[in-house]
Image (tube, rainbow, N blue to C red; front, side, top):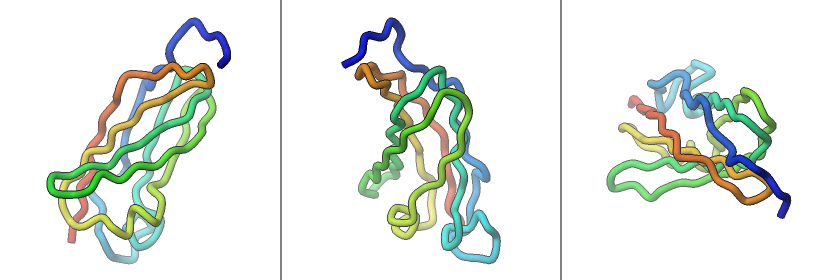
Length: 112
């Protein structure tokens, strides 16, 4: 592992739009691209996202991103399993030295 003095930090985590239709003609609908997750970080890191809901198996995916602000879409393999309801998206950033950031949370609501 590389030596690094500071843990990575997620300075912003937002989901747009916060309410998404499960089916429809809009680009943000789950059957199309789905919602965008906007993340700002202080350094290059691997982001681990968890999507959770009561009585729903936690879905996890990872992406590598560079320092700064980036957009990530929820992968189709996860989107197709999301049913209408409220979900919590939790993100953690881990740098190449293995240091992890604090958890950041955002919410997403799937409409019928």
